[in-house]
Length: 203
Image (cartoon, rainbow, N blue to C red; front, side, top):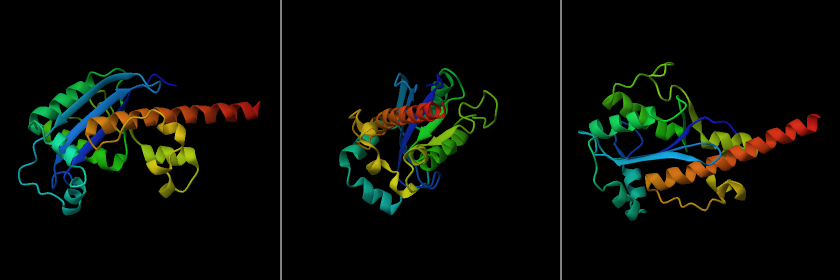
């Protein structure tokens, strides 16, 4: 296991396209692969002026009224919340941190859009960029470990050992970020075991 800092990010939104739609809540859990939690961040956000909602996304939200209520409690202007998030990330140890999400193709684009819209974020190889291009997708990682077709590497198909932490997935951003973080640590333990096994078979 390495001493790198990982950042599990979970975004809740009212549609799939940043700018056209709005990020409703943002949560992040900073952690090590040994399951040490370094810190958490959570905020709800005001919707963007002129943005719309996406019909199928709003139908999905209707299935989870408690999660919807949670993500609409005490929303902040993005111009205040997103700089605070960036400052929090920059203060984490061992920068640049490794951004992790499930799926990263969704959460990353929202974070990237909001950082560029509401902060002086610099996307470069320097320490000024807390992420740079360090973005890791959980399903892709599972695909490499499970050796199954990609479509069968989602959460319902995870090995039992990856779910033994027993944390809930409630669609409240901070709950889901915690659950994903501990699942990812279990994945990393499997990866370490596979590496050790390969080394042992070569001796």
